[in-house]
Image 1 (spheres, rainbow, N blue to C red):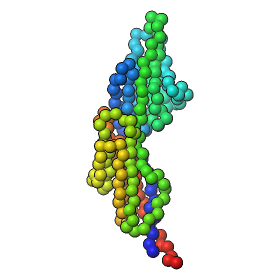
Image 2 (tube, helix red, strand yellow):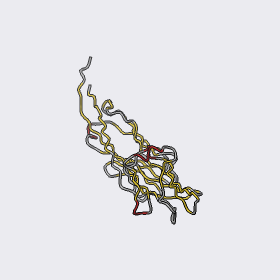
Image 3 (cartoon, helix red, strand yellow):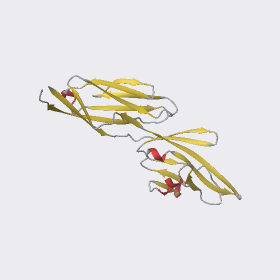
Image 4 (spheres, rainbow, N blue to C red):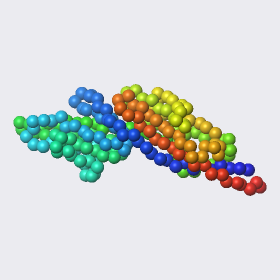
Length: 206
């Protein structure tokens, strides 16, 4: 009996994208993607001291070298190479006429998750295999998820999760599947690529 061993190597490629901003009362919401760089604005001006930044829920985040205050740009906060744990409410504080003011920004991270995440999947020739791509279900605005194979869209949905089922054959060796998410308020799409490497293994029949 001929067994195909499907080795899945994840190669993550995130296209550089702009963050999107929206207002919700006095809080500014910023949406950006995992691996991107975002600059948070401090809307306090004409203050008596330089604004000081803090992460509301996890103050230890401010000790990370990926977070830098840009003094030349009105004390904006730059967060580089975003990871999921950077998601927090960031506030800048300053004093004006002996009164303390704060301006807060909620930073939300967009992340594409592909399952299963096993390194090796075993199946016989012609058996089916399903991969699922999902995005944070709290992401606001319009969104579209697509699976792309050989440059063509093979499945698409406006939901937060999309699955693709296909047959295991030797011919899928070295082919790439791409999960692509288009978020309404982000200028560029976010992509994650899954590369399949297939090798054959002969199993002696009992």
